[in-house]
Length: 90
Image (cartoon, rainbow, N blue to C red; front, side):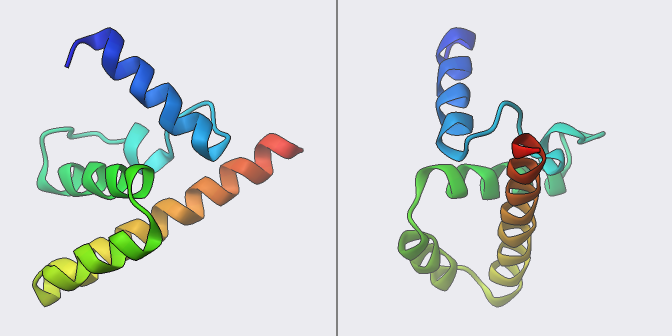
């Protein structure tokens, strides 16, 4: 994907949540090549592109450890999005 296309897609994802920037879990990464960051990005992708039901189905297909890890990351991202929305309203 070209940079322009990626930027457009990213802006559309942020607009969907009413945000102007990505959540800190994504934007504050110090090692963008780590497994942890890749999983955070996967959680962000799922949150942006799938319905709650689709995410639930995806989680059921994962191993127990992976499902719990991703559930935690998804919940953390949701919480950060809610906090960012509250801050934007102030």
